[in-house]
Length: 146
Image (cartoon, rainbow, N blue to C red; front, side, top):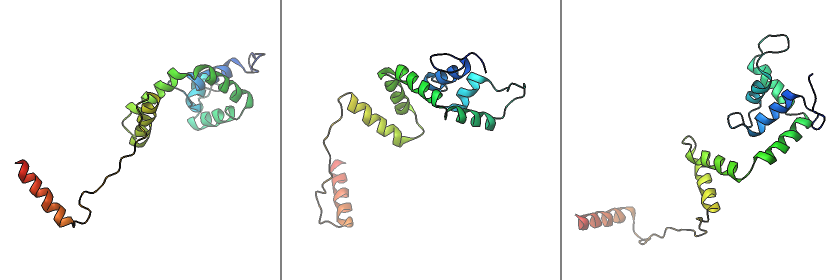
């Protein structure tokens, strides 16, 4: 199965899979893509594997305790404040999902000391007015501005 590293118990391709999975920006956390990068799309018999097959093989690797241990070790090495800030920036700058974006901005502001624990509450200055009376008041205020 290839040369096995005495320290990790992994083959060169398994080690590459772990490194790609744990640290590579493009493949980070994606087992299928990491497997393709490390092992390629062709099996030992030279036939091209389907994505379903590659997904199954990567899933099997991610169940291997030696693989998981090595990924954790590598993440400890690669995961630092720079990476965390970079990932947080990625979420903030993305435009697809607003909920994670708002949470990321809130977290960023907390980290930068710009977060306030103040809570704002809307107080209706005219709580006893009906909707119609409020509309009339707004219209009066608009007339004053013009």
